[in-house]
Image (cartoon, rainbow, N blue to C red; front, side, top):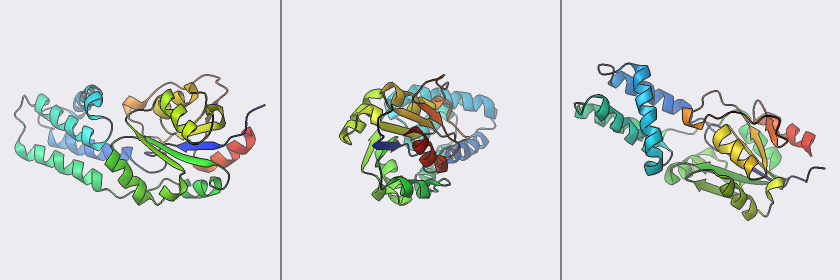
Length: 233
């Protein structure tokens, strides 16, 4: 018999509010700026390689993305990129940091439904200041009993976050749109992992789904979460 569920943790970007779409729009503009030096597909590959290389230095988020665009522009043009292009890349990064938050469908109603019965956590990775800004603008901050903004998501991170909430891992559930960061490490920690596909996924967050794992579930959107919990417990 399954233990009772006490704690539900949520990812933030592309689980509670839109995020990846703004990266895609900026990346399209980046391709326009460097169209004389590389086609879009090749540029995307070079940028992804730079991001992969730089994560350990800059972490996740808009600032690291902006620096990787600048590095890619310098490399792809052999240092010939104009200062106006560098300036526009910097401007697009600042625009992303100022972009208003847009909640995904069903987010607020689902959070409100779950709040009376569970400890709710937010576990997100990325730039501290940017994630704090987005949470404040979302209007959801008061519903979470704990907020963890981390540089990476590992089983240890999840165990520690659940423990801070007074829960064991098998009494806890992580809900998110990233198989690699939200679902798999939460399951490895001993908790439930609930995958909510978003449609747009960053290549570095892609990972295969677990096969026939008893602690894995998938829902179409957050409105299905309360019923899933009722069915499980």
